[in-house]
Image (cartoon, rainbow, N blue to C red; front, side, top):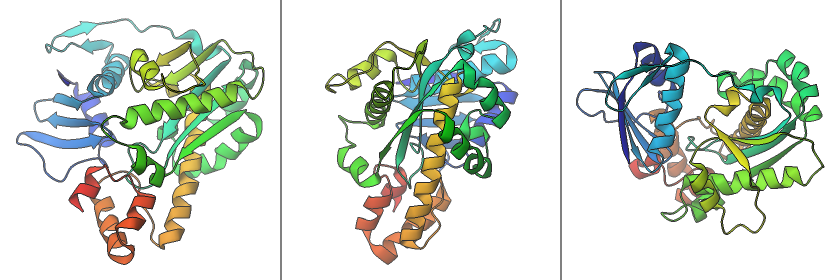
Length: 304
């Protein structure tokens, strides 16, 4: 699938910053950069056009289309025209919800971590006072500070997919989105059955269509159904924001453990700095060590 549309200068700068650690070494002609995020290739051209190619191209493109709408009160149509829109009030933020989010899917080193949390309306003031929001917008120092406070008060379940298991299961028939769907379902199911929570909705930060999500988990015996899928849900739903922070906290701790194991600080992301460290680890420990600490389907491993 391929999706192309034009972005505003305001959004262009945010896109450049977001993909700075995911860029490929080679840049196509007339492009500012080309990056790889999970199963999607993203190319931003000097003209302001951005192209998404891959299995999840529609999901990745829609995230930026939604942000364009929020920033500029407009939608960029696929033919390049603009449509002015009015912001919709999203009242789901004021409900008690169960939500889940993941971390680590765009990082060569480290596991994939999925967390599900239950947040009651009674917890809103506590969380807002802590400054809870999307973990990608909070620096790691702040994450390490507030996550333990959240984990003491907010019910949660965290599921971790280590790199060895990831490499054994990732394939053409079991891509990143399928693995994520299975992990989200597992965390949500375990949390739901942990207590009789009184919630209005179950929310997932949308990474694939609803139909694909349920297709991915069709062979799983214990399923969670009636899920609400929202793009950028970590900015709109406190349970997803908490899940994002706890997942990030767990990921950072796991990265520290892996760094100690190889006696080399492991960088996040999948940029050229990651290639240098991968080469160093390969030379010191061999490819088997990389298979235990990295995602071998990433282009970093191909370049190595």
